[in-house]
Structure formats: C-alpha cells, structure tokens
Image (cartoon, rainbow, N blue to C red; front, side, top):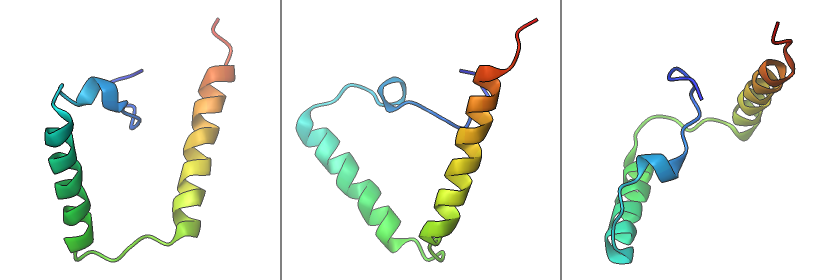
Length: 66
C-alpha cells in the first residue's frame, strides 16, 4: 500500500490495549462524531465516493505491469 493511499488498516494503526481501554477510546470517538458541528454527508454522496475509490483500486490492480 502506498504512503499516499487513503485506505488505512486499523490493525497497523491501533496500539495494543485492554478491552476496557478500547471501549473508552471507541466511545470517545463516537461522542466526537456526535458532537461534530459539520453537516453530515448524504448516503448517496458517500456511496458515490466509495464506488469511485473502488474503481481506482480495481484499475490499478488490473493495470499492465510492463
């Protein structure tokens, strides 16, 4: 995966912690999202962006490697 790739995998990004620490972290992340004053992104827009990203990944995967 390239350094500029927007896809990040949680197992590499999350330090080891106890279940209680993870629960506290997760709850804090959910609360931050709920408290975020920015407007939400409509489902259709999120899905359009995801389809676009999936298309880019598939194109890279199927690109010739000469």
